[in-house]
Length: 217
Length: 96
Image (cartoon, rainbow over all chains, first blue to last red):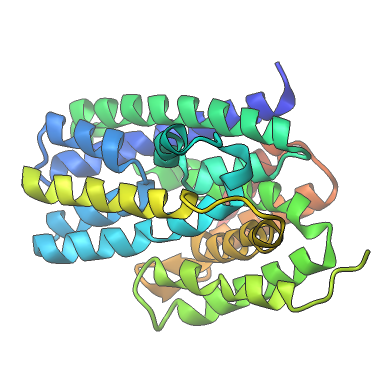
C-alpha cells in the first residue's frame, strides 16, 4: 500500500476514536442514536458536531448551538479552492465530493507531491474517515459514559501533530512559510477575542501576506 | 436536539463545503489557493495546541507540538510525528 494511503487510514482510525467521544457526548446531550448517526453522516465536520452537542448538553439554546456549529463549519468553504484541482471536473460529482472537504481530507490531499496522489489521498482518507466516524459515533452512543477522556491517551495531542506533519510540504516555498507564520500568529491573537472557529478564518490573512511576495521563477 | 435543527445544521454545513468547490480552476486562483493550507493549517495547529474553551491555555499539548515539530523537521514519517506528540504529552502529564 502506498504511503499516503497508510497515512490517510491512520488519520481515519484516530478520527474514529474521537468519533467515540463524540458519540458519548451526543448521548449525554440527549440525542437519540438515529440523531447522532444522522449528524455524523450528514453534518460530517467534527468541530461543529462537538460544538453543537456541547451547547445542548450545557443547557444552551438550539440557536446558540446552530450558530456556533455553523461558524466552525465556515472554514470548509476555504478548503474548497485548495482541493478544487483534485476534485472531479464535472459539477455534479464535484458537489458530491464536497461533502468530504474537511480539515483532515484537505490536509492529507494537499500534502501530496502531485495532483494524482493528492486525489488518491483525498478519496482514501475521505472514505476511511467517513466510515470510521460513523462507527465511532455508534460505539460511543451505545457505550455511553463508561469510556474515559481521550486526553488520558494523549489523543488531544495527536491531531495538532497530524497537521504539523501535513503542513511541512507547504513550507518548502517562502510564500508558504510567510502564509503559515502570519496565519498562525493571527489565529493566536484572535483566540481570546473571537468565538470558536473565527481564529481559523482569520488565519486566512496569511494567504494575502504570502501572495504579496512576488513569486521567484 | 430537534430533527429540524439537525436538518438545518446538515444543510448549512454542506452549503459551506459546496460553496468552496463551485468555482472553476484557473492558474491565478490556484496560485492563491495553494497558500490556503499553509495559512489555515497553521491557524488550526495553533488553536488545537493552545486553545481551551475560547481562551489561551498553555499546557502539555505544547510539549506534544514541540515533539511533533522536531520529528517533522527531522523528516520522520507521519505516524512517528503523531506518536512523538502523544508520547511527549503523556510523559509530561505523568510527571507534572
